[in-house]
Image (cartoon, rainbow, N blue to C red):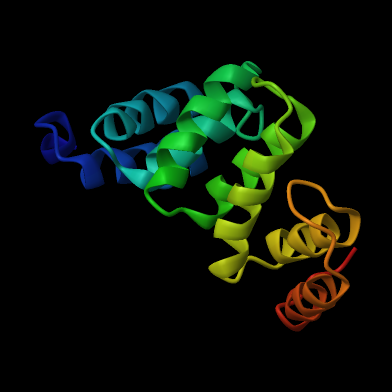
Length: 154
């Protein structure tokens, strides 16, 4: 705890995880959020992802789609595949941002290229329907096969 209090981002993240799951300490989601936020503000990628989850209500936080988008975008820019996928979903649905299928496709593709099966399936759909890209049945089938190979299930 002392290292986290001194500003070490990894320690802050870990303390947040302990509070989130109640490991060796009483479970406290708000305390977890506090520690993750400290780490996230210093650029910790997984903490940024978790803060996005908090604001999307995944971690029981108060829903704020703009804040979720903001934090996931920070993690996405650092290469987090799940955050990249979530950014695609938000652009796709207009949650916290204007609908923008070109941007949605771009972020789905970034996550798909890292092997995230659900992103690969979304890329397949985009190619099949011409959403944010040109219709390309061959690329659609290729990405669908990759998604299935990587465990995608509807």
